[in-house]
Length: 265
Picture 1 (tube, rainbow, N blue to C red):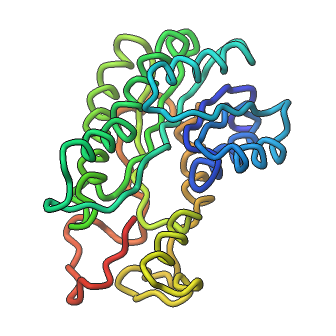
Picture 2 (cartoon, helix red, strand yellow):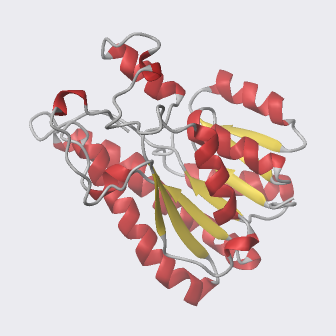
């Protein structure tokens, strides 16, 4: 058991990558705090994992005090906190023409400020356990697509925070901070977004080799498998690192000739 008896908060874990991380963490011996906005989906995950292994908290992370309530729930239920996975995020389309101040602030509030506040609230307990923080970013943090402006800005800021705290917290608190940047992942929300864009239900079965050299895109379980390394003791003292998980290099890659089919991630 690579995470035996570790207590982990996983935000945005009622579906997608967060759900996969929570399930894999429990399989590796952890206790998890599930979190999300969809109570019905959260209860399904809770039933699957068992109340002896998980507890559920439903709340918008941009609500004042939500971070502290998540931390308090973990400590009240299991007496400690070993790790935080900041996975919850708004994945929304926007560009320079339609992104106003209110929209940008909302995206930053959920995708960047909420993770910061959760780290801040969790830090006293993580200091006691010499725990760790894993931020789930996006390859869009490096520049992003034209129609993912606000999202890309928020993930770029998250990545800078990871590098900054990844240097500062081990020295001051013994707490490590790292980040995974997933590429294009076949989550429930991604499937729904593509259907809303007018694509057929099975759009993911026939993708251009430019975007899916392996013939398919990533699965949430593959991101979860990588997350376990960072959440466990086997990653040792490593901190402040950002790892891109995609099937091709992001920097220095040849640009596609046809940009009309560029996917969102």
